Image: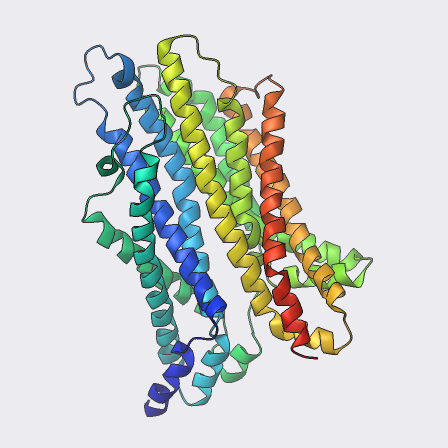
Length: 447
């Protein structure tokens, strides 16, 4: 135990500004998004009249519907932000795997080493969550300038109650600790197991079956929902929103399986060494490959949903108010999704380069040129991006066809979605450009 105490600084030391900043940035973004989205939904809920039994007009009449729309945006954004927090925890833990091996070599037990690792992740989560709360408070004043077609919100309406912030920070820290503990279960915590990065990659077709069951259940429920809401109840709408949230969240369940299958097939048929190397990296860690594009997939789904909202043509003052609220809310949702995608993509791609630095150095020593290493990484990125495009288009199309009985006939729908896809690919290109110097640096250090 004494040796373990002296070895603990190996784990807690900082291993580089960039590597240590990435998890904190992710925790900050996740916390700020969760607080801002929940605060916005609560602001709509507070404006619902206490007495809805009498006739309502204008803003009061639309507020229940707008609150449902805010809830719908929340169930789309909050799970993705939570997933980003979980990814940040796993990323933070990955930075310490060699130190885990060193601590095991000096006599630390699996429980002792794992406990210190989880505490380190929790400390980074605490720092990121606190920064996220501050960021949330800073962005609240600019959000009051948005035009929702109703009385502008005040800063006080967009902020959470004071007691909610300690709970949010505590929740983020607990999420990080739980994600780290689960990740440790996939690592063989022996001196050689960690050093050799011994992991068990398990991909089951059950992932695809679970997603398929949710989709079938959603399509079946939409056939009976009109009967449930015939008396003015919103229970059917709430259940439908829950189904959509499950479908969108299910993309992160089925995504790694699709990446794994595609990577194995591509590796078997790869005509070039770069494609072979990239495909094998994906097959070895399909979850990380999908996490790098999960935010982009989500942003493309949101862009697909907006194609219907963008074609609404108001005819009455109430319709104009509703259209303004939906347009502004939709664009705000897409903006938050874009920030989420940018952080997820940038952090994930940069982290993967840092993770693969020893392999990049070894490949360069073996004779691979830097340009070949870039092509292998490009192949590793391209396959998940193409899959994400297919999954996002299918998901958005399924929801729109099921809910509306078809897409809008306006040509703008395809154009708007195409612009959303272009924006998603632009994020990938930006992530590649930003992290490309790291590949060269890792390779040339070995020279």
